[in-house]
Image (tube, rainbow, N blue to C red):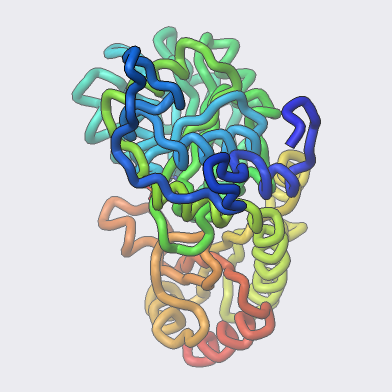
Amino acid sequence: MNPSAKYRFETLAVHAGHSVDAATGAVVAPIHLSTTFEREADGSYPHGYLYSRNHNPNRNGLEAALAALEGGTSSAAFGSGLAAVTAVFQGLQPGDHVVAPLDIYHGTANVLKHLFAKWQVSASFVQMTDVDAVRRAMQPNTRMVWIETPSNPLLQCVDIAAMAEIAHQGGARAVADNTFASPALQNPLALGCDLVLHSTTKYLGGRSDVLGGAVVTRSDDEAFAAIRTAQLFGGAVPSPFDCWLVMRSLPTLPYRMQAHCANARKVANFLHAHPKVSAVHYPGLEENPFHALAKRQMRDFGGMLSFETRAGKEAAMTLAAHVQVFTRATSLGGVESLIEHRASIEGPESKTPQGLLRVSVGLEHADDLIDDLAQALDRCA
Ligand SMILES: *Cc1c(COP(=O)(O)O)cnc(C)c1O
C-alpha cells in the first residue's frame, strides 16, 4: 500500500496492518509466538521488538488495522473488550467522574461500580437519549462521557456528535463503545469522539472463537499515553494467535456487515408483522424512534435486534426453547444467529422486560431464520 494514499474501507480492511512477511515472502502473516527478541551486540533492538508484552508483530499489525478502520492515529489491543474498558478508566485519576448511559453494557457498568468506585472514580448513569439529562449530569470533575450506540438490549441510539460536544464543553473526553455497530457502519471519531472502544470478540472477530478488545484514539496525546501505559504495565495483552484470528476476519468485515444488516432487516420486518410480538427494537424499522438518528450517523442499521413477546416471559422462554436454526447463547457478531433471554443473563438487578429476546442475526439465509422463528412462535401463547 502507498502510505500517503487514501484508500476506501474495503481496501483498508484487506490491507491495513497486513503485509508480506519480509523474511520469507509469506503473503499471510506468520504467528510470532516468540516472547523475546534478540539484541544486537551493541545492545540495540534492530527490529524494534524487545519482549512480547511490550510489542509483538501480530499485535502491532492488528493495532495498525483497527486504527485505520476507525480513522484514528493509533490503537491499543487487549485480551478482551473489558480489559480495554478497564485500561480506558485506568487513564483517569481518583476524584474524576464519568457520565455513562443507563443501558450501558452490563460488564462496563461492573467495571465502574465494582473496580473503580473504590479508587474514587465516580459515575452517573443517565438516560442518554435525553440530551438535557446528559447536560445536567455533567460535573466540574467530569472527565469522560461514555457513549454506547446502538445500546443493549433495546437498540436505543444516542446522538454521538451531540454527546461529544457536551463532553468537550465540559472539559471531558468523549469515548464511544462502537462494538454493536462495528467500524463498517459507524465511525465515532469522525463524529467528534476522542476514543473508540471495541470488543473485537464480536463483529471484528466475527466467528465467536476469539476474545479481544481495542481502544482507537483520534490523536496520540497524553491521555492515550496513559492507556498505553495501562496496556504495558497492566499487561492485559492479547496473544499473538488471538491477534492473528482477528486479522484473519477483518477483510470480510464490510461484506459480513452488509449481510448481517440485510438479514436483520428481514427478520425485523417479519417480527414486526407477527401478532404474538408486541414490540421490535430495531433502528432500521421506519417507525422506530431512533430511525432518523441512526440513518444520519450509521451507514446501515446493524445485525442486532430485540423483540418482546405479547405473552411475556413464559412465551419468550417457550420460543427460545423451540428454535432449531438459532442457538440459545449470549454474545453477538458471529456467523451463526444467536437468541437469548436477556433479563435472566443480566441477573436480578436487570430492568430488561421479561418478555424480551435479544437476537444476533447471523449469516444464514434470512428465510430459514424467519421460518425458524415462525415455527417457534407457533408454539407460544
Ligand atoms: C461484549 C461487549 C463488551 C465486552 O467485551 P468482552 O470481549 O466480552 O470482554 C463491551 N461492550 C459491548 C457493547 C459488548 O457487547
